Image 1 (cartoon, helix red, strand yellow):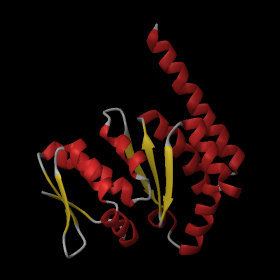
Image 2 (cartoon, one colour):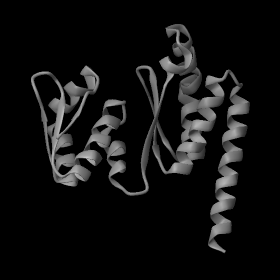
Image 3 (cartoon, rainbow, N blue to C red):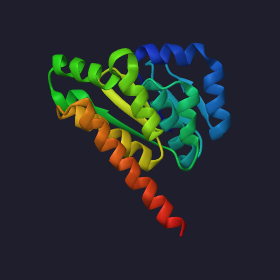
Image 4 (cartoon, rainbow, N blue to C red):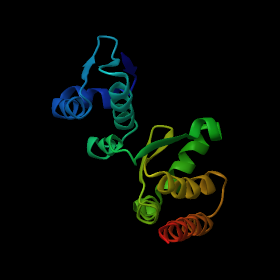
Length: 174
C-alpha cells in the first residue's frame, strides 16, 4: 500500500471529484481511498501503486487530472523544484514565482510552448510534466530565473537546449 499526502485544498477537490479518482483507479487497476487522517491510500500491485501515486502527487502539485494523467504513459515524467529550499525567504519565493509566471502568464506560456512541458506553480514549488528533454528545457529557463538571470537569458538558454535536442533527435534518425 502506498500513501500520498497532498495539500488540503487539492485533497478536498479530489474528494469531491470522484470521477477523477475513478479515472486513476481504472487506468492503474488499483483502489484509491482517503482515510480520516487525510492521507490518500493506494492499493494495487507495486507498479500500479507507484504509477497512481505519481499521478495523485502531480494532481496535488496543482496539475489538473488530465495533465497529471499523462504520467500514465511510458514517455512522460514528473519533476519538481522546491523554491523554498532553493531560495529560503518567503519574499524571494514570491518574487521568483512572479518572474516564472511573467506578466499575464506570458513567461509560463512561452516556456511551455517552446519546451512542450507542462508547468504548474503551486505553493512553494514549480513542477513539470513531459518528456525528459522537454522537462530539461523548461527547467533550464526556470533555473536561470531562480539564479537571477534576465528573462531574455532564460529564453535564450531554453531555446538553445531545444535546438540541441531537436538536432540530436534528427541526427539519431539517420
